[in-house]
Image (tube, rainbow, N blue to C red; front, top):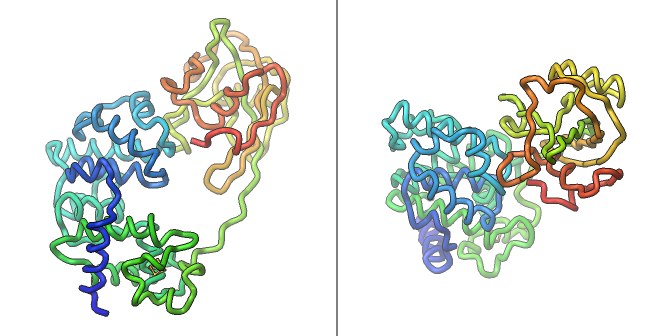
Length: 363
Ligand code: SF4
């Protein structure tokens, strides 16, 4: 079966079954860029309302380049993984500084923008500018690995190069954007991670995985690292008006820009409650606390860490210092970090409660 025939069958299927998604109406580089960044690690149903809201508020890169941290968090609400939003803002600033506010069509210039990796570059270049570039995400990787019967770890660079070469060979020069989106849709709707629907697949006739009956076993993925268990502590200090004390997470740290309950951070030498915790907090913030009982226990998974956070009631002695401020317990306007939100959501903070990841939205 020729490469053309693969593309023809795929595009024929796409004409009939393409998902109706708001960003496909735009085909405009900024809209494509925003949608692709939002779709990384977030489900389509969650992205749709956030995308419309975002583009209304920030119709051009220059508008978002000026957004403050709090505005950025409000715009990204519900999507999680805020680092993506910060990189998108950095990229928008690059567009303003280097390209007079217009997303460049040149491949090298696109790839040099902050936060624009190979996948995002390929997606913007092909969908918005019509360049014959592949855009290989997890969906595409899976479809190609199965269709070509690739039996090696898809995250290894040699395998990635092989997958890219196959996509490039099959990419129709005049319809690269549609081809890339069709592959993504096929991966999302038909060649799904579990139980691929081979009987309705437009490229089933020459699918190697199907021929060998190994579609459930491919793609091969690296073994998952066992999560590392980490203990952490934080304090809950209430103002009499109901606000609570929080600090902004520093640049470069995970969840930078978000607000967290005062905490010594994740330390190799986990401080005990009482004096040790008070001392560690003083070291970090220059503020003194009287530490009380545990009022919340929270479990949270982040990258390959499983964090068990204990939150103590505490009282501020003297001033809070410049690094801590009073914040409302309002998850729409204040970008509380997920572990802090979990702790704050425990209604009755006078009693110890256990909160599991399953009980609360993780992002
Ligand atoms: S035939 Fe099955 S395994 Fe092969 S590409 Fe189609 S859905 Fe995926």
